[in-house]
Amino acid sequence: MSEAQWERTLTVSTAEQTHALAAALGGVLEAGDLLVLTGELGAGKTTFTQGLGEGLGVRAGIISPTFVLVRIHPNRADGPRPGGPDLVHVDAYRLDSAAEIDDIDLENTMDTAVTVVEWGRDRVEHLSDSRLEVDLLRSVGGEDTEATTDGGVMDFDTDDDDEPRTIVFRGFGPRWAEAPQLLEITSPVEGN
Image 1 (tube, helix red, strand yellow):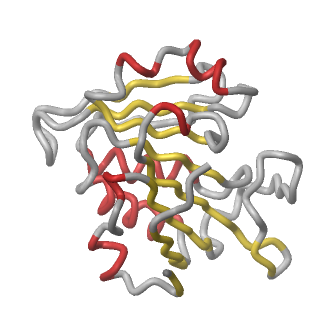
Image 2 (image 1 turned 180 degrees about the horizontal axis):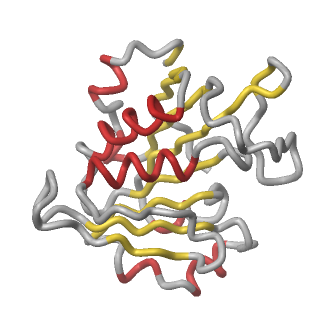
């Protein structure tokens, strides 16, 4: 696996701040972009994706695609980015391999949409030579938990949407050779 070209770490205090940060990011995303979201249950992956959808100008109503695996949210002609890319939202939690990702045929939409894959690490890297990884970490018992898909710390209390989150962004490939300006302006806590 290739090394990240840059990393930025931000802290948000509320679900509203998570949404707003993602909406700002959605405003700079382009057709063909691949985002890989990682975080425990309740970390804010769907809230983040809802913000991306707002920034992209897709139809409202983004919910987790847990049981259907893939949801496509079309761009709104009357939204902030008419004619902009659609949003393809994937939940890869129940998929065990890159081959199973290939079976859902994302290649047909990759060039014309922004593709967001929850739980996609080590499953979707082959889909594009560039990707933006976003780790959403929430605090459990006062300590940051590591986002894992292999049985690490899982806090199933998803009712506290307004506890602080740490969001780590990593850019891979030519599309993400540099961090988006909005991550620089937001004054990251730390970064390379």
